Every structure is written in C-alpha cells, then in structure tokens.
Image (cartoon, rainbow, N blue to C red; front, side):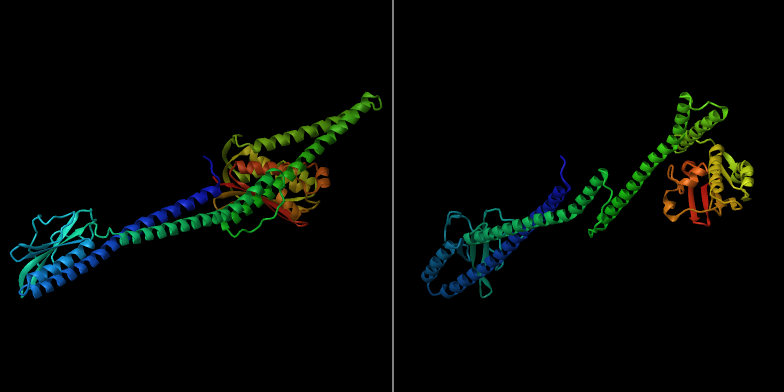
Length: 469
C-alpha cells in the first residue's frame, strides 16, 4: 500500500510514542505494585510487632493474676484483628491453645506451627515474590524473663494488600497514568503532524518546481527553507532548470541554424533552376558549376553533421593504435602549409614526444578542426602555435593563436552544435559551427577533455588532454 511521506512520518511518530508510553506504563506499573507491596508488608510487619507486643504485655500482667482477664482481652482484641483481616491464635509454653479467633480460612482444630525465635516467620512470603492468594501464617514467641512463655500465631488473608483502600489507590493511579499516557500520546501525534508538515512542505515546493520545469517553465526563485539537505536539493533543481533552459535555447538556435544553412543553397539551386527552366537563363557551364558548388556545400554540411553524430555515439568503436601526437600533429600541419602561407601567418610547432593510444583518423580530425579555426580567426600576419607535451600522465595537444579571440559571453557555448561567435565572419570563412562540437565528441570518446581560454582581441588557446600511453 502506497502512503504519503507525511502519513508515514506521523505513523512513525505515533508508533514510537505508543511504544514509549506502553513501555513506561508496564515498567512503572510493575515497580509501583512491587514498591506498594513492600510498603504494605513493612506496615504489616510493624502491625505484627505491635500485636505481639500488646499480647505479650497482657500475658505477662495477667499470667499470675487472672486467666479470665487475659481471656477477655484476647476476645476483644482478637475480634478487632479479625475485622482487619488478621487471625489471632495464642498458645502456652506447652503448646496448648489459649485463644483462637476462627474464620472461614482457618479453624481452631488446625494443628499449630510453633516455636522459633521471637519475630521469626514460619510461612511469611518473600517480599519480592508475588503473593498467590493463599492463606499464610506467621509465628512469634512470647518471651518472658529470657524464656519462651508461649506462642502467637497470626494468619493473613492473602494477598494482604487486596483490600478496598489499596485497590482504590491502585485503580486511581492507573486511571491517572492512563489519562496522562493518552494525553502524551495525543501530544506526540500532534507534534508528529507539525514536524511532518515542516519536512514535507519544502519537498512539495521542490516537487511543484519540478512539475513547472517539466511543463517548460524554467524560471523561478529559490527560497531558503532552513534545512540544508532540502536547500541543496532546491539549488540542484534550479541548476537543472537553468541547464535545461540553456539546452532548450541551444536546440532552438540549432534548429534555426540548420534551417538557415540548408535553406541558402537550396534557395540558390531552386531560383537558378527555375530561371533555366523558364528560359530566362541559359544553362551555361559557369552557372552549372556554381550550382554544383552549392550541392558540394550541402554535402559537406551533411558529412560534418554525420561526423558529429558518429563521434558522439558511444557505440562507435575506436580503432586505437600506439601513436605519437607530435608526429600526428606534424603530419596534419603539412596539409595546411599552402593556406598558412597564403594568409602570411607564422606557424610555430613545438612537438615534444607524446605517446598515446588514439584512433589516428579521428584524432587527426581534432587537429584539423582546431587549426582550421585558428586560421579563420587569425588576421593576416598573425601567429599560430601548436604544441604537444606530457603532463601528469596525460598527453596534451594545444593550439594557440593571436587572432580576434572570443567574447566572454560566448565561452560557455562554443562547443555546442552550430554555435558561432560571429555569424557574418563565420559565413565568410565557410564555418558552420560544427567543428568544435566534433572535436569535443572525439576527445571525450578517447576518455579526454577539451578546454578553451580566450581574450577578445588577444587570441585563443584550445587544449586537448587524453590519457598517455
């Protein structure tokens, strides 16, 4: 059964409260009854000594004067004790019964259990043992002039604390305790409701925020809740929202860029072909070659998009071989000699040995893309530096130029698909915003990274780092 978090928390509080209250009730009730029993036993022992002392004094006074007077005392005293639940029996030194206050539990024909030291108990129960409701008796010697002059036997209607006043006290205590327990249990549930609300409310706020994000509403303000974990979750959700909003804008920009890139050559092809079909233009060799160039341009764009998809596909297997990045970079740079010379750019290559396992064709594409970008955005007479070196067990390739640089606002997006920092300049130079995306995808497929630093008007440096051999 699915339960809401708030319900689970309240039930947890209630279960803990019930366990604590029940445990406290059981323990306190047990110890209360034990302490009450010990207290009553102590009172009974004091009562016994009082009875023994009273009977002994009267026995000593009346023993030589008048047996009748002693008998009258025992009759009155015994009846009063019987009303208190105590049976009195008195025996002389020879064991003959002098007096017996009979009741329903014991008749005077029962044989007496005599002897023992003064105050000793033949049948008294251990105060720490539970009374089973049986009839119990205790015997006490009457000592006169250091001699046993007789025996007193006292019987109790056990449990001896099972009387009206004791039961009333225990019942009253139980009612008070149960009432207090119920009050504390209700208070615990109320506290559980409040605490559950305090915990669940910020979570519900985050939940609502995620629902708005799912619906496309990325903007929103983060509010502190005071709970470190919830605040961290809220910050993470806000970061996710900003990231999704950025990705959404990039997708829109990508769709617009793809549309523009393909619409331009298609428009050229359509207008020229329609003009030729309508007889407005003669299909000369130059015009056909121009249309073919637009077709080649579209083909290159499709190939670059396909390269990007394949480079970013984790299922695209790499054909790694032991290589030296310095030799690989030198080979690629030789293909740029004519373009570099045409722009009057100075190329500086510092190729320290840099062994690494790479897919030579794909890693060459990284070098081609980075050097092509440097050429596009470096003015006539500028400089390009290409370096390979090892750093902390990693093989590093860097391409630096002193060209126009990249604006700080563009830096977070330069590796996104079809992102171009300067639209007009990119089109003039033939750029389409895919090269850096391909470079990043290939670097990551090698378990590496690519990073960029730039200052507008001062140039840029791109650094690729992959695990060394």
